[in-house]
Image (cartoon, rainbow, N blue to C red; front, side, top):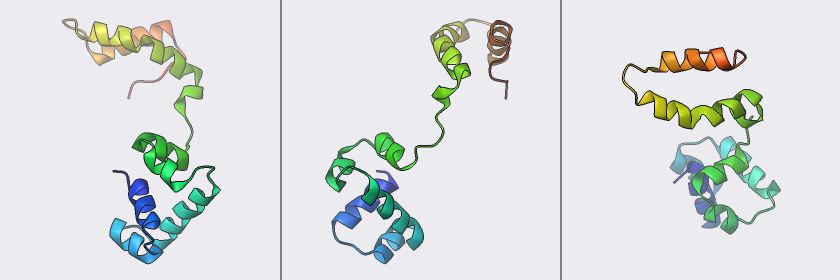
Amino acid sequence: MSQIKQLLLLHQQGKGIKFIARSLCLSKNTVKAYLAKTALLPFSIEQLLSLADPLLEAKYHAGNPAYKDTRFDHFKDKLDYFAKEFKGVGVNRRLLWEEYKKEYPQGYGYS
């Protein structure tokens, strides 16, 4: 269970910020920030608790999704091909990356 879900459960049970912070090894300010974000969301605590952990985390940490990058779209389309080719004898990640870069020079670098 994610920390956010635990935080929401404890808050729903009527526990105080200090108790929640101590229980989850978070700072009081972090707990306050999560509760403030919760108040701004158009969902009830029950609705948030019913979400799967990744979906719940996404409500609080939207971040900068990679799928907006055109490189990601091209790379995502090639994943099945890479998985199939990787099972071949003598095929390694470097070889697949070199093939990918020849086909799509502005693609991701090898790290």
